[in-house]
Structure formats: C-alpha cells, structure tokens
Length: 145
Image 1 (tube, rainbow, N blue to C red):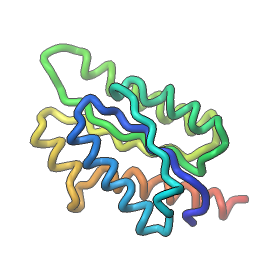
Image 2 (cartoon, rainbow, N blue to C red; image 1 turned 180 degrees about the vertical axis):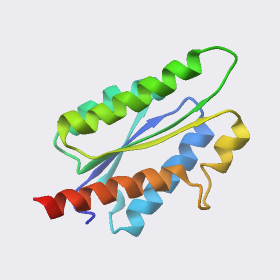
Image 3 (tube, one colour; image 1 turned 60 degrees about the horizontal axis):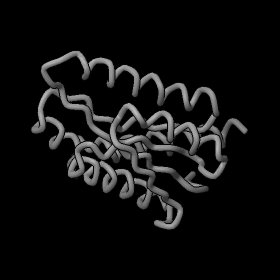
C-alpha cells in the first residue's frame, strides 16, 4: 500500500504549526512502512502557494502521493476566505488533473488554539489524517489497476 515516494508540500507561514503537521504526516507514512528517504519536503510561504508546487510535484511522476500541509487562521479581513477556498480548490484540482492522490492537511481555523489542537499528536492530528487519506487513495488506485 505504501509503495513509492511521497511529497510533503508545506506552507511555512506558521512555522510551529507546519512542523507539527509535518511530524504527523511523516509519522503516518512511517507507520505505513514508508522509509524516511521516500519522503521529500517542499516548502512554500503560505497556503495559497500550495497548489502550484503540488501540481509540479504530481506532474514530476516522482511521487505516489502529494500531501499539502499548512494553516490559515482567520483575521479581520476577507483574506482568510479567499486563501482557504483557493487552496482547497487548487489542491483538489491537482489530484483530478494529474491522477496523483493529494491530501488536504491545511488547517482552516479561527484561532491559534484551534490550530494547535488540530496539529497535535492526538486524534485531531490533521497532518496524520492527510497522509492517511493519501495512503488510502494510493491503495484504492492499486486495486483499480
């Protein structure tokens, strides 16, 4: 199920959250038998840039899956709504256009406290959940081929 390499495309706008999400995703991949050398991390400034690099990672044909990680915390303007919507749409489009499974591990929350709760090592670990979703898609594709 874990065959191949995986790209983690990571929005670094909130560095501590990014590291927590990477740890969760890497942990899930490791638990599935993916070696550390099979995981490549690509950093981008923020969530809006995730789809662009995810597309190029998927098109490279080097990865069985692409896992997008980051956080967007609501502010006082509409910027949050645009970034969240376009990141989600763009990441979904990458998977549909390329046929490479993509995971959405982007926190879209109101507060830093909510983000910390969803990037931890408990059942609300969005990095781990995004990696698990990609692994499930890879397994489904293997069964379909």
